[in-house]
Length: 370
Image 1 (tube, rainbow, N blue to C red):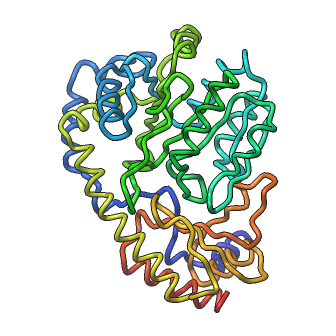
Image 2 (cartoon, rainbow, N blue to C red; image 1 turned 90 degrees about the vertical axis):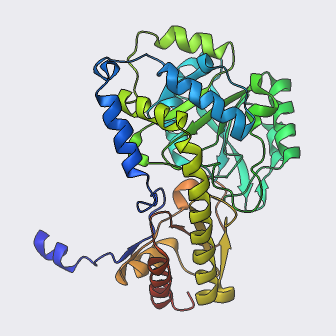
């Protein structure tokens, strides 16, 4: 019976998978050359530094200053393998002084899981398509907050300068910390990115960034900038632990950045992704008109499609699958603050223009008007 199921399983023609990158524009030759170069060096045959390679930390420090306005000493940058892994390590330090954390609702489920693993209680800050409801913040007990201010996960909304300043003021007053996850700040299509929270007031902000979204998920490289005294406690706690990030990836990325290839890649991809984003948003609007709303087309590598019909997220996903299109749920992002209509997530990073057009046409057939 198992074989039978496999035979009848619908074939995926178009997969709107979020978190996938454009393979055709990946600088494979350059990356391979640098990787081979590093593999030939003596350094690659060692375990590497516990908190990440100095050469990479220096490159990240220079990049953060130039692109995000964050002044970070290379020694305050910790390298890890993923945002979740770094949050688990960080939770180990923070739970001595904090018993809970405020998270966005909806928000990144991977972060919530990491905090819950460490035994933190969660308070939720409601977020809407227009942004977070900060009036709720002052009624809350916790002094830690985890936010995605550049590109909210999943709504894609950016936190305004006024909101950023208000949040920093709150953290200073509460003697708390803001965990700023800047996971794909590179890809903003309408205007210049806002300065990072960490650039406004670094003593109260723990800044997290990664190379998965903007470069390559499989590279497993992530970093955070720690303010004193958290930095000292982190170093003291983890100096006997091996680095969780691949040494070879670190050395290659450091060289890639040093040669200016990273900024070249980001500039090139911003143009590529902007065109794909516009094409996807236009295709959805063309096929569905007023039956749907497109959310988050100003930045990032996915959009949300809000379907103005009385149907469930599951049925929309299932109907799409019957037409060979894989689309993704958003219900898992929500804790208490549920959406009034089903929201479907469509990633476009790895798809070509024709695939996007075809995928949306198939969705139209699957959903009808919806």
